[in-house]
Image 1 (tube, rainbow, N blue to C red):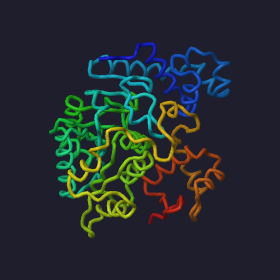
Image 2: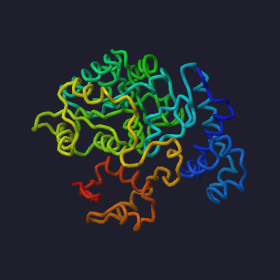
Image 3: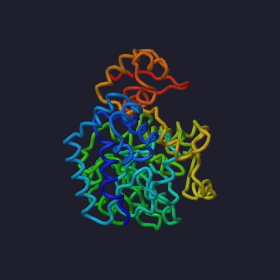
Image 4: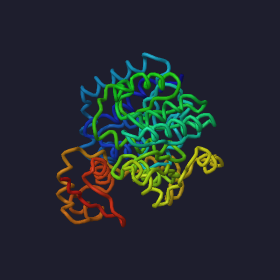
Length: 382
């Protein structure tokens, strides 16, 4: 299996993981120098000219902890020929992600890397589904996989696990996008399923081997789940849930959203019903999805963003994920009345991208609600 040359991999790894170099800065440097090895060969004066003094200083002082993490990653890659590191410039890099807002710069993969080029559908839903919800996830995924569709999900308990299990029965198989390093089975209940996916499907992570389950990483990986699929199916979801955020990320990436209706008395159906009211396609069988997406032979470009040139993937301007310490600043700036992203940006001094990432986390935690008209409201939890 193709691996990037060792020195190339080291350059990508150090650029992405060096403390003091945000994702935004890494993107800016890649746009200027075209590849990570070229970035790392440039000296402090060039780094300073492109990305500023603090980034130049950080790159000039390699962090010993990064060297240790690099060795962990190398050991993980060397342990099996089925493991691969895929960089943004790699031929194996999934074209679907190039048309998204924030494509990961480096992916760790174990299993059938060719699935990244297959027609895919993302399936998301509740961690605590009804028995019927779990059965629906399994059956829809099995039917779609039998038709050759690859099912993408996040390996969480509940709907995700059921969708992966169903997908493994068909030729399309499954991709699990995990929120930890690819070597850390999480949740533990899915250790056996994780192994089956690594053998028959594909495990995918933007987090280096050894990365533990950190809360901020899970909402961020949802953009990869949404981006890989030509559409996203929401099986069951409460009104305040990560599944609805994944669905919104799918819409922002120009993808279709499908929702399975349920009982009006079930809290787990309310998220799907809300999506249907907002324009998601109501589906009652896997055939409904195949008919809708069957003719879709090209990856859709980002809606309203004028194309999907790979160069767009390297445009500067998005910030690194926001640290937890910014939570109080954002909540403080929100106050108790609805506020727009622009107003919050002015109050906090944070970029729209950094603020958006933090609001996404707060929304997932059920602390903030997104209202119509681009407004955000702090929720009062009793």
